[in-house]
Length: 158
Image (cartoon, rainbow, N blue to C red):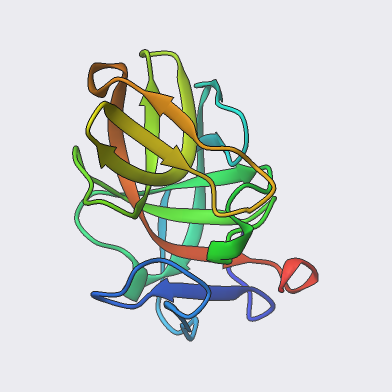
């Protein structure tokens, strides 16, 4: 995605759970390039495939360990994350209950879901009422990062 006034940038508001009300539009004043590392499934987990591209986003959305992924699927639509969006991720190795995370499953598949730690393991919860959660053991997952922002072309704007 090249820099463009035609793109919409949404930034996660601090200290709010990720939902449709937790975003604010960000002006594209100072742009920086970050790595676009591939595709993440917002649906059924898919095999991790690394790409080496880049994307330009507002500098206010970038922290110390920031990268981007392209979203495929519609399991996160209630969090205002849609198929084709570019999500801005900050690398973290853990997540709090209810945070939207990029998760590696069994060192093979990657998915984007809300993460909940439960008595018997972990629940990966879609933000789409029509999709079921995924239940796993704690040792089956690795958190790769948390969603901090979204870049979207206007044709995709909701």
